[in-house]
Length: 325
Image (cartoon, rainbow, N blue to C red; front, side, top):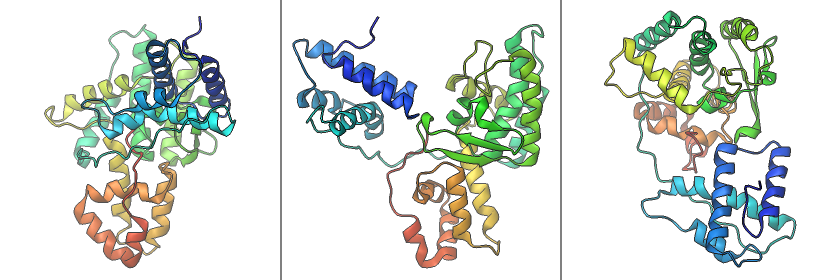
């Protein structure tokens, strides 16, 4: 049965096929919100014969208690849809504006070395309750490697969850992160020790899931969920660290960036060059997206300003940040 019900459902189907074919489709975000928009129009404009500006404006109107960040997330797929139609002269309606999110108030957790050491020891020590259940065995293999990959590369949790097996080069130690997951395509080079862990993991899991699509795949043949990541992170964190502390798995990415930047402060190499490398490796569309790391570590911001002198303001202007996915 057709999942779209509006008067322009055929155009949505063409749009979705185009985005998927071009490798630029994010199903959890775009798929959900384009369906909600379609159903909204079908229910509120049942006599409509074409997409209208009124439909766009009504859907994109700011809702009570909605932030600009959530509004941008909700309307982004519709903006892409309208842009698609306009480029093909299929509509003359104006696309919704981009909504700049409010300044972030969340401060990432500052990990201590001993806390992380205990956390990874707990991951390594995990023993399944049911040795005959494939899911339990997969958890034992996956948890230590998955979180170490985040720690050693600074990858987004979503990038690691949705990583396809075909995009991991275990010979050269290079991970190809595709644009299809919502970010620009970029490459991550693994440390040799991390590559060895990934190779060993791949061998073990291949015995359980010989034809898997995702590098980290669950027993049902799909990728792990956001809930799986956070539930397992909290489980092993709380076993060996203060349960009242409030880190999340994504904080590991912030830790990676800050540790790298701190390590350059007394380095003789050009600081700006290394900042460029870090930006590309972490999948930022521009170097300015690293601004968050300066704002959350004030004393580091002062040091960086001294090191980069007049170039600092050019490198770190106020920007629309796309981070935290």
